Image (cartoon, rainbow, N blue to C red; front, side, top):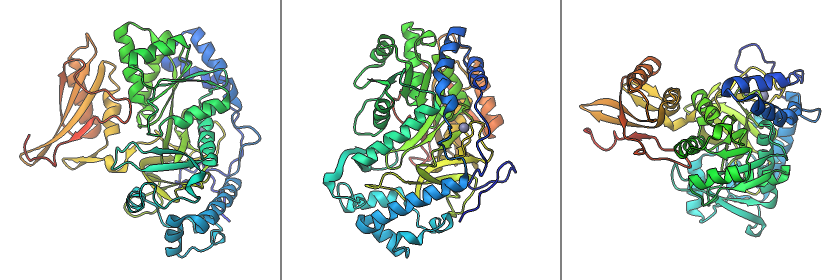
Length: 488
Ligand SMILES: [Zn+2]
């Protein structure tokens, strides 16, 4: 059996954080003071936010798992349950696991045994769906058991279709209730979903979870940005749920329309779909624009809603009661502190993923969180995609690093980055849309910051207002043109 790994030594525990007892009750003051300081909200607004947060002070109650050993036992028990089901009836995993020499769920007695299981990749799932259209062979039950079908956004390749049973849909929604609890969302809240509710799974399960916590859900599907702002005002929405990019876009539209959202009803924003809400500069921009507290969340169509922020907002927790989490070196597959996130979902038996390489780049924080949870914590949430990094003049550059720099300048309304190759040299250009009245001195300031932080020179220029694209989902601000031509 796994031995609990003590924390506080500074050594990376490879995702096995804890062994410590819940000893840190959450102080109301520690929750509310940072909010006041970061948003400059009015005393009334601060008081409302304080009251809204009250339930989350008790989010880690006696019923929470407080020992790492107990958590591992729970994970292994649920994993064996999942393995029994897939070995019996899931063609995709039965073949994969049998090839790896696993014939019985009882073969997995420890997490060390678990880590011998083969990884699952998105390319494998995609190839399986191509070979067995439309849903592939990763189905544990006959098709009449499934009640929902969704698909990935297709940002990285052809969309994957994903099926849910009644049980797994409930499970997915339950994972979202953890996100709500972390953000202090209660039955008293009105939740506005700035989301199109198309085939992409996005915030569908967040909508289900709103129902299960008794909150009011307001759909923002098929609406323009102005209609969404009006709906937020008309329904007195207290929580905005969207991508971070879209929250900033809505704020921009509000400014143009003369709507003061910072003094409006929204107290909390929750974001997923992109890394932005975990980036300090983007988070601060959203909090200031909305006069609200901004929470990060992470999930994926084929995995589930795995990440949530607690009231301390010091990194993204992985919900390890529902997911087994590892961080690996993407090249060697060995465990490390910073690398690719690998997850197994424990409650989606109808169409599971086992040791799934998410492609998300993350960095573990080995210190225990002040909220008392023993769940692993990722610094800055999802930092980016493993394959996002571009090499410019020999320097590894992550789009999130550039975003964090640019968003640090409130004068910038939108931006885009282009990478070219000219005479065998890489050039990076940043195009900026500035808010009205912004000084062009900012162009030099951003170029200087990029040089200072990333160690590369970038051309920075401004473009006229409203010429860069706006995004509701999965912003694409980085364009690498080097594969097209050796010349601009
Ligand atoms: Zn925490």
